[in-house]
Image 1 (cartoon, rainbow, N blue to C red):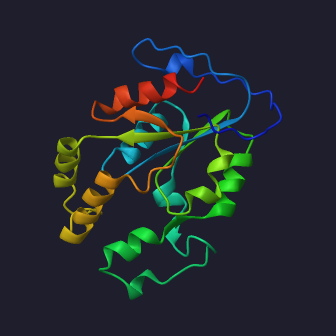
Image 2: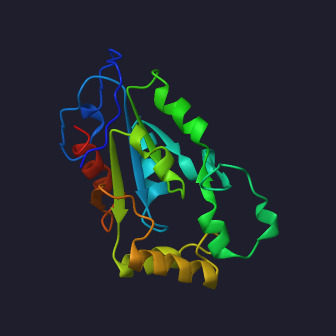
Length: 198
């Protein structure tokens, strides 16, 4: 199911086919469009965002630029310092700034924008996107990637246990999203995303 918002044609042309690798040339329609790239920890959201930026796309690292610790229902900011080692609390209150998301979605200066990252209040703004992609990896790939995170989220035993549980249950994955096999190289993952942006 494709998630769309109503937006008047801005007159921008999506000049992206020449940026694609591997000969992919999806026919992207005219107008400002916004896509969300979601997925659990270790699925490659940050790497996908980096690759999109390297190819010349406007891509936002949501977990760096939009995220904070807050109440998923009200958006009220919380003091994460009060729960420094509570992985469950930190995860459940990792939310995005909704007004900032709305502002960026309405920004007509870019023909296409990719928002990359995960949040616990995604249902408050998911309707703003033309399509939502979910990166999915197998358990072997996930373990390998977590092993390469010595000082990042997932390096602590409690964080890793939480990530593995969420991977097994899929409880944070947005419904009706387009699944992307993220076990392969980042270049091929991005190719797959761009091929489905038409």
